[in-house]
Every structure is written in structure tokens, then in C-alpha cells.
Length: 316
Image (cartoon, rainbow, N blue to C red; front, side):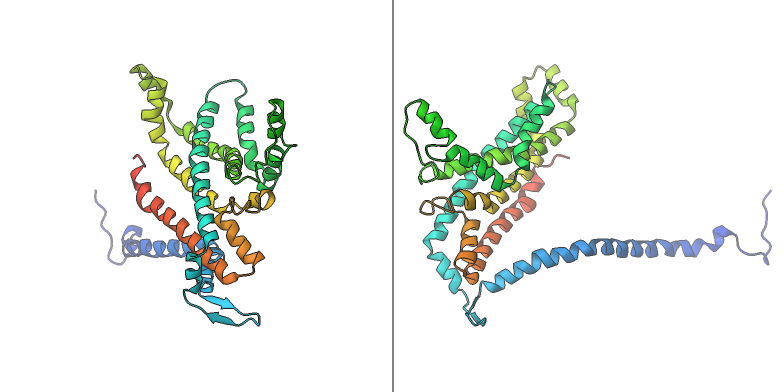
């Protein structure tokens, strides 16, 4: 039997809260938005203070020179014109290109090979993972000093091995034809273990059903890796590649310890040249100009990554 509400009785909870409930979602969404921005505020302030402001200040400084009395003088594009005719800049840029070409593909391929190897069920797997990853945790200064033990003329390990076969000693870091190769080998040794961790994590996320299904169909291990595993690792490969490219432009510690850009600028990289211009020659305007070029190069690579490649390699 239906119950009729007396006209003098108060409204039920359902009737009373009808109009209010329609206003609650808007108020709740506004509060969530405010809370989200408040949570982002510390990171946003740090990002502005330590990233965007220094970038803008560097761009501005590239158009000014500072006199000895501290006065700034606007010089426009003079620093950029000087950079275009600077042979050391072009030498450093070409060196950086060859350094990146030598370190990036080799370290990535080696990292993938190590990750596939230590992802298998075998004895000593934990020890192998630790051994591959150990160079990564060492500071670059320590790595440079370790590899000086290999490259030191007459007393280094390489020359000791050459002496066993009756070969004369060789100044590995003092010869323009070998110095860049020596640095490339050292950086590959350090970075491959770091990239291996990302590949290993990605491999452990893949379903074993894929390999089992391929095995049932009679596919070989190489075919399974080439057609199934590696395509699914492409997002990780892109991430690792971007990190490897950035590292190839930002490494400078080993040059300070091992070669100081020599011999005859054969090992000078762009960031090391910026360091020399800024702190050895005290030319802040020209150093800012070189930094702007480096920022443009890295920003272009980042745009290619996020704007083009990223949308073409992810599988839904």
C-alpha cells in the first residue's frame, strides 16, 4: 500500500538533496583541480627556477658581452658570427657526432644482448646482473682513472699485452687516430649496464605465452626475437636511445681527467669546449652562445622523439 506524505511534513532526504547533489560535482571537481595545482606547485617552481629561467638567461647572455668594469654591452649576433667561423667549434661538433655514432648503437646493442642473456633461467644469473651493472654505479671520474690503467703508455695493461708479442708501446690517448676510439670503448663499458636494466625490466613484463605460441608454430628463437620480442621492446629502445644521445652530449668528466681535449682538439667535445670557454678563457658571452646551440640540438632531438617517433612505436 502506498504511503502518502502529509503536506505539512518535511521533505524526504531524497527530495531535499536533489538540487544540492547536482551542484556537488562541480564544486568537487573545482576542489580537485585546486589541490592538484597545489601539489604541482613545488615542482613547477623548481622547474622554472632551475630549468626555464637559466635557459632564458643563457639566451639573453649570448647577445651581450661583459666589460671588465661589469657593464654589459649589446653585441647582437656577433657571438654567433664568431662561432660560425670558429674551427674549434666545428671540430668539437664533428667529434661529438663521431662520439655519439660510436657509443649509442654499440651500447644499446650490447645492453640488449646482456638483458636477453641474464633474463634466462640459469645458475649465477644474479652474479651476472651485478657484474654487468657495477660499472654504472661508479662515478665517471673513477671510471676515467680505472681506464688510465689500461691506456697509460708503456705501463698500461694494453702496452703490457703488446709487449708479450714483441710490439712497441703506444700512446693511446696521445695519438689523434686512437684517442676517440679509446674514449668510446670506455663510455660503452660504463653505459651498457645502465641501459641493460631498462631492457631487463621490459623483458620481464612480456608474457611468456607469446614465445610459447611461437614455439608451437615452429618458429625459431631468432625469428621469435626478431618478429615478436624486439618489436615489443621498441618503446624501451626509443627511451634508451634518447638517454644515450643526451649522454653523448653531456659527458665531460672523463675528458678533464684523461685528455683535456687533446691531442690537438682530437677529443674535444662540445660540452667540454663550453667548459673551457667559460672557465678557462672567461668568455661568458661566447660560452652562452655555444650553450644555446647545444640546447637547440637536444631540443630538436626531444621534439623528434615526442612529436614523431613516440606515436609510431607503441602497440595498443
